[in-house]
Length: 290
Image 1: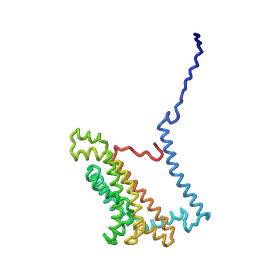
Image 2 (image 1 turned 120 degrees about the vertical axis):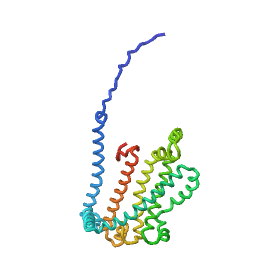
Image 3 (image 1 turned 90 degrees about the horizontal axis):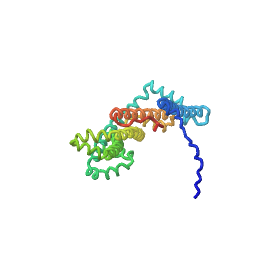
Image 4 (image 1 turned 60 degrees about the horizontal axis):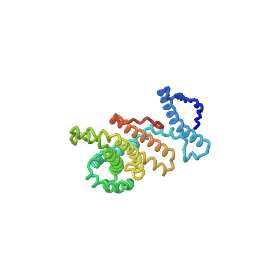
């Protein structure tokens, strides 16, 4: 037998140089955040500039789509003259009580159904069936029940918010790991201590997500209900729909922008309250960040 010995191949060592983000993670995060903020500002500004240019150059009919500068000027005039605020307060006076009632009811029912299988078995089919009913279709029923005042609109918002918070709360309580409950039982926690120190801290972050989503939906519902039937001809929804019927598109766009601002501020308020109430929950690090 003949054995042939070949020369061994030279050993190649691959050296990977660290990137800029690995050499200075803090600076990389700052640059990434600045880029995201710049994109968040630049994109809507470019859209507004295009809208402004299109309206001024006649590419679009400015009677139907007034230029942003015209809308801002009209909105500022309405705000300084005091014409805008009664409608804003009227909408807030309807959406805030309805939101509070619906959120409290949804949280209590979701908590009961999440912790007790028998209550869940008894109520879930009925609530599932009612959940899919378009909520605006309930407005005539509420007007029959409560009259033509503010109550039907408050009830409509409350029912809408209830279902979002109920689902979020029940799902959050059910999703609490069994290990948490077992740990509480090992330490001899009673029903109240189990709720206070186990179920509530574990489920509250997801409940806050449901509250934040329902805040935006509550604003949408009250705008629609005011557009259908406003008891005193006040409210941002009434302004939007009435302006459309009168072909006053400037006032309509002013109302839409104010609604957007109110919705963003309401949602942001809920988010900040949620951060204060759940300091242990993971933080939203902003769009685009993983």
